[in-house]
Image (tube, rainbow, N blue to C red; front, side, top):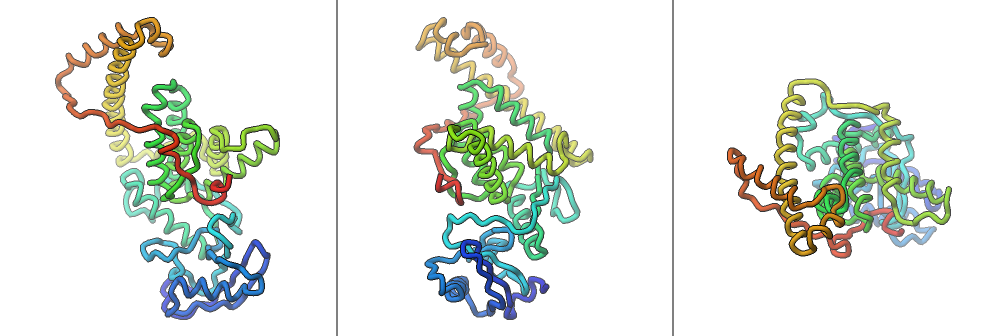
Length: 355
């Protein structure tokens, strides 16, 4: 099989349409063909079936785009590849090679330590690796967060009460995390905890949305096949099952970041930032307690926020303690998140769009 440097020469590939179970051999892509020209030629190759659209994908079901800035384009296709053809943008295309799941926290092919990479850089790097896998006819999911970090986030989510959940795991924040990690425009409207769990999954599977989507879809089908009366929408338990299954498959349960100088320094810095953010969050919640008591009365506020006792004493004591600590002033107001589910709800591409 040729390498990417061969793209300036004519390439001969094989096409396969799963919907019709039809293979077209010796399909030629010439250097002069633009993306739309290749799509037109693909439709002509399947003209017997009168297809109205053709969406070329690699052997792992990853779409081959027209955007030259994307690592997965028709220009990157090499001689001898096998391409899968979807008949519309929502058609389910499963990878042909068996899935291999690995823990990917370091490696010689990383331009810099993984924890120092932005979400965009991490996403693009892993997408480039996925493109390389397709040429080699491999299908590898790379988990780029250790299991311990994922479980810590899930534990915080599980212990959050309604108000803390909305403040720390807002729809806006979860949506932004998912979009950054998976580069999707839309995510299916979901219950708040389910969306937050999906955001955690997206952190661990940065740059690999189709593999995560396939797994979530299968988890939902399995749940509903066991109980036909179960909710049709994706549930938090479905996403958690995917997380568990992925880390089990990678033999990465209990994994943590490698013990080296870079990770030690990053962990120390993140711990300091987390403590600072936690203090800001507690102050904001304490201020809200006082507002609740003024509007609802002390007893009603205690009922509305169980487990905190009478909020007034807690609020005043906490804020008094904060005011005495003047070494680290904080003059930045917290950003207000809008959590109107209808306005913030977005949909995920692929099969979930049809559910």
